[in-house]
Image 1 (tube, rainbow, N blue to C red):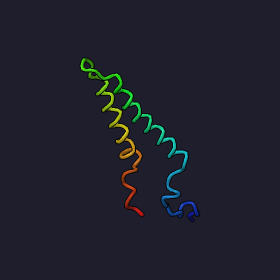
Image 2 (cartoon, rainbow, N blue to C red):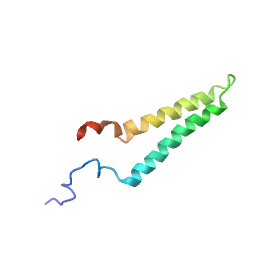
Image 3 (tube, rainbow, N blue to C red):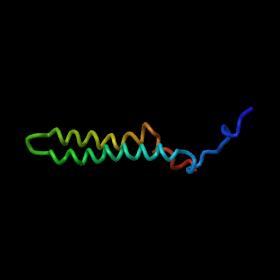
Image 4 (tube, helix red, strand yellow):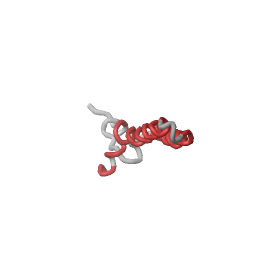
Length: 77
């Protein structure tokens, strides 16, 4: 016997809890804003702020697209 919870159809409205989406948004925005902030330390003598910027910027796009699987849900509905 399966319960009603197991048979619930996933729609865009009930796929993700609001709290989880807010937490994910805050984490990704922190990475993105950290990447932008690191550019304030950039100079011709010190290339490390650009390396930090590229790393944080890449993480800000890679995490939602691969780990959380947000990039592959557009064509399901």
